[in-house]
Image (cartoon, rainbow, N blue to C red; front, side, top):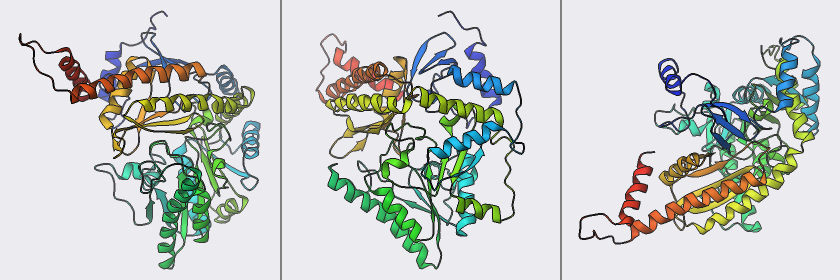
Length: 477
């Protein structure tokens, strides 16, 4: 591919460092990528190098999908205004979203981002219940607004993070591998684990009720993403919702990262737990990179909002261009059968990742559809997180032109949330490459355990050189 003409990367870095807040961090900070183009599941840098994107759950139907691009272009050439005026794209989008939901969820509000959606959901919950206390999960992340940071332990737990408000209660994340309750994963024990984790939420509800108060809301991602690709055990959300509703609270399902068919078997991840939330929030994949998001709730909760007499208005939420793009995304999901693809390719990816357990560092493999996590540990019996090793793997995969990320409270979980156009060949390439990279770590482990003696001429042995090289790579990351 010919060189893509643009500002030199060094100049881009220079201007970013000068004019952009340092808190706005980059992937691969020591040597950041400059991405100038995207097509389907691939991204290209300024030199034309192609990278397989296993991170981008925003480009849900693939980078720059022609149908989505054309829909935005066409509507932008006509009009882009606010939702105080009637337009067809908004009402068609609302109808289509509601048709994917359980019958009770039938009223839409349109906003610009997942953070705004969760903020509005919390506002709806407070107005409807007239309660203040919110229950969230440890390691959860729900957005960058101040109101969302308050209910995001993923941010509260950071050094220098804000203090947790008194009205926020944190329940253990239902992590059956390294959480508060762990057990072998047969069906019976999984259901018991679901009850044990759910009853932790029940204890919080009881404490709130003992103060003579009620719960406002329980908010959780249907599958926890930033917390380390956590798949809740069977029955967990069903029992949690019972506890919360008994305490007069409402249940908010955050589908910002896991919705729109990513789990393969259902359009929305909460459906895998057999529950019906009171409020559902969505964002990221809805516009395939364009800022559009939504809240879907019940008529009863929507009426509570209306009865306050306070008008809800969002200048850009639900504008014609955003709605046209979101409708185009739904077209692609349906016409290209991407939900079925996620089930088929995701199952293949998960099975292939299971084979990586031949490497001692791979402690757990888990996932649903195209939402997969591989947890790295230093010791399988102790389940000690292999944080530096995970960092090494991410950097090495980048060198192999494959982009993955890591997350979880100890940053030791390799995350796979690729565009939904990801294929079986892509999955094979990822796992085959990861297998080779993990083998490098296996080699390092063997070398470090061996007794290495210097040879007589003072030249280091090849084993010692390899050990030093790998250690140097890990420390430099």
